[in-house]
Length: 219
Image (tube, rainbow, N blue to C red; front, side, top):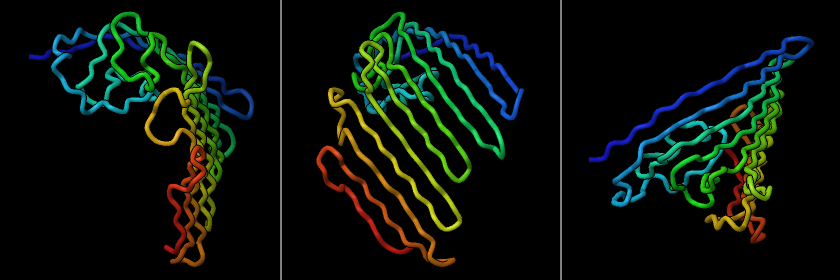
């Protein structure tokens, strides 16, 4: 049979500053985890963990695969810093930086996952939310040479009659990731009446200089 397990500890220490017109929370985080060896890994076919990719959510997961076809054995440390600033009518500014270091064990994730090397990619993320308008940006930075392995930026605007969202993302070409390595997407909707809206959406492959998908119509 196959028996898997892990043990670990997590520490976070929120620091709150409430002086002035804004409240700011800084939260350092540290996780230490040791996972058992997987003596049956050679006979398990990986079907449910094909697309693992490091981000700020996955960084502190105990099981960073989407199932149990892959098992990340050995010891690792994950650490990061999260910040949140709140002011006015629920305006928020959020930031995060973090990384993981494998202390023992062999890599099980793909080279383009951000988790292949002993020192993972550095995750840097930021978001500003002003109610009707918001911008979110995330990037994965190669810990060895500083290459931006992934950039993902989303800007959104919402009003009573209009919705618009623009997303830009790019991946470093050397990662051999399937699909376009640079793309921009637009989703938009304009309310014409209480029941009808004009919709225009486009998905632009910047590498190939073609529109992979384009839609215009009424809804």
